Length: 416
Ligand SMILES: [Zn+2]
Image 1: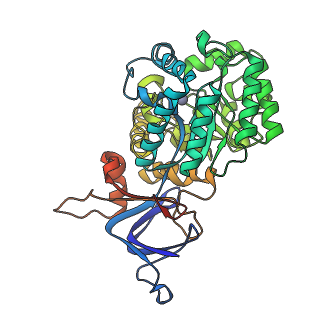
Image 2 (image 1 turned 90 degrees about the vertical axis):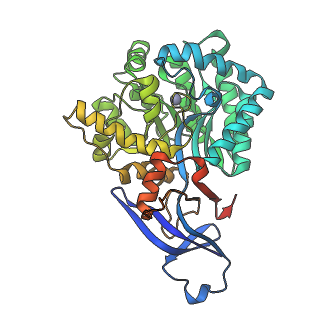
């Protein structure tokens, strides 16, 4: 048992924040036991960590990030998707055939993700088994709750990144077998996107998903270009989502669809049916994808939405920055396309960044009693002339905070 003193904020529900200024939270065996304005009599002798005017919030979840692209953050972001893949992304991903290079790159990625308060994540590796194995091993060892995928691509990529179909399936199965029993970070099937996979490969991945009870992540109706390519290459399917549904990839575990910018009515119905997560990646969508998710409309429809940094289409690894940007982009969307769209609120954006997405990782993303205590303490955000409320501190952190504002990090109740 331990006690922590701070201002405490978390999502009460989708539309409201719950705030407990100047309060005490008790954590036992990694789980929140309760929150009180004064220390309860029976806990008088429990060890106390006092963060004074610091603000305790749940840790963030990044539902869409490419670990190998971390070295490209903030580079080439003036290009659009197809050209950006060809000139920036694929040349870097090729380098991950070299395990020693991959180790250097992945160590920095994991360090910076944790430093920025992301303690849960759905991560893309590359096609390379050895490098992706190192990534999942290290994330698991560091206690990151999440998923890592060995990427599958057997067409429409440079030769060095185009897999032989049979080998792609064989190596993916070995990856599932080797890491399926991991404690924290587990495998997820990761067909990069429909244009980069043959029907044969998607079908085989569907069978692996069923055999091992594993879900999938992919880029879903990411851009008009991607959706058109998918329709050309899979003429028997009426929309992007149908490709994965037909292959049996959507009913074995979590379904994580990156972007979901231009969903058809059928795409939305299918995601609703399987409880899939649409991942809003605001920086990425502005930089290389050029579309805005209709997040207000999807939330009102009951579609689950998480946030993604999508490094390096997005340039910042901190998911907190994406909560602010999601609010801004929803305003632009509703300004230019008022029919059916609305701006989202900050509590809704924070809900996507922590509570809603945290459900994927087993009871994280909140500080209400019973939650797994994965949390961070933020501070240094008030002005001398005026102290912010806990809710204002959280909002300001998402707009102008940096990792320097994160004063402490906890996983399962253990300070890092
Ligand atoms: Zn992506």
